[in-house]
Length: 467
Image 1 (tube, one colour):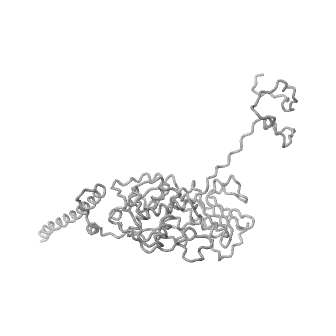
Image 2 (tube, one colour; image 1 turned 180 degrees about the vertical axis):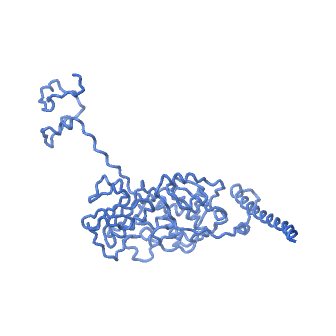
Image 3 (cartoon, helix red, strand yellow; image 1 turned 90 degrees about the vertical axis):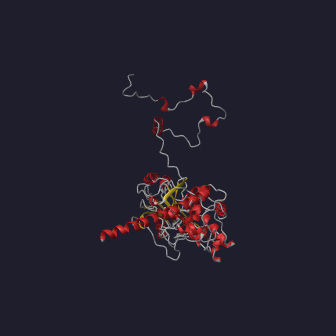
């Protein structure tokens, strides 16, 4: 009986397996047909309708969007590991044009949110900004992400770290971009909300620079590289065009108070128009701590205090190396709480950390992090050494400073002159500096001029001189 039962069941199992295979084949053919038609339209050919494509949706949950955590501790190793991840050989179809169809206020808010994401993430670079903007719009259309432009860009902004776009939670927005750069970013954002598509990144929903290593890099399909940024999409069905909505309508765009100084559309209350510091790290309700020399050597957040400026409004620290550099802002928040004026200068190398104020010029090229705030003028800046932290958005990079040149070695003649008792007044200049015109050979009677004592002193022969 058992044998007969097994024999009777085998054809049924086989039929089920064949049926499942035919369904999978049909789904694959539908996807290939849609892709072929998109790339090579043929007259009279009709694309499968949305219902047919939706029927191919797998029975798997929507991917979970985790907080973004980047490891920037070893850029060279990250580049090596990223290079070992191959680009996907599957087709990389371009996204459909997105056209915002909300009201004027919603469009203004969406434009400024998108422009902020593009500018703070890519810097004032049109290609990089468009690539970032395309990822934002791809996310907007994917069911795993919020349904507004501002919601996508500022997702997770309430976190201290780990937000989806790091500039929204690491204090970067305290640095106000130039009016020209902001206008250029807004112009690109308006174009993208009106149908402009950046095709190279396809349906990418993730990206990072090649010198950092997110934990998810090898779990997604790497599809494109733009400058130093690598772009990824989800594997399987959730990374294909049918997973993305083609609708161009987003929900009601929220007010983002962090954009109040840049965007009139995000000023929810009249008092936000006043010149206050946007996204300030500082809690002005707190009484400033009486930080003095007794604090030196104490640990404050991610590092140790090394020097305190006279007046107690300036600080030097040695901060921990490695990990997310945005945590250095925590030290600034603690030291500067309640202070209308404050600055923190920090180094990751204890050997190069200055031990007192004023900070010498020679130490500035190796500075790792700086924070400055002048509340009355609305100034608040957080800057990083982008040679040390290359994943930092360019808008947050310190100006490059050349390392101080080593002092030139002294010549023997300089040593002799320094030992001579002969002193010249400060206003004496070589005769060549006082005469205009080309330099001429010495006059014939130049030997009659008095000679310096050092010029007529005998020269002692060297020990190996045969004479």
